[in-house]
Image: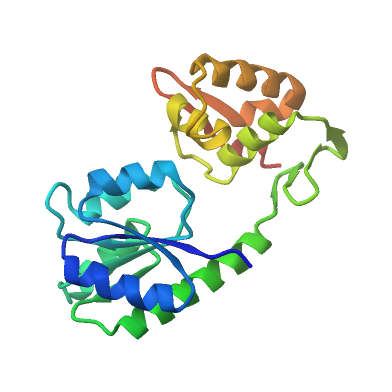
Length: 229
């Protein structure tokens, strides 16, 4: 079993150190950053399984950072905060966090919460291997597309592009974000690569292509309502 990678973004060195010690003892691979700038660099450089994010940070607060990275990175986010108000917890969860832990905390509790969130993600991931929108079926596990009972052959990149759009219906993606998500951070191609693949994807999808909408001056989105019967 591969080690799960945890990224901690917290400006308190004592908190980083104690969490690092506990998590490493539990078999996690741990990386740490004191601010969101370094944290963002680390997120782009590696694939993490969970992010532990402080709210009060020197360069950007955790709320803003969470909101900014959610469209780009698919991983559980657990907030750490000295704020114990229920409204703060609700705000964190509404912004896309998966859990909220108040300071002071027990390191063992943080480890237990991380394990619980990872179990939920594993279950959700297994359940989300197939999506259907009207007569369009996208099956990730078996890597096939069907529309009106006809199988549509897609290249691996076309499939990944469609999957990424469809699993986030209504969300508008910039070409740069799609390039990073589908081709990877180290891909140095032109953003027009995305346009070329979208064009090919639309041609292959036929009538179902109307679900892929162009948002002029921004990028693309998947509009599931277009496929409702």
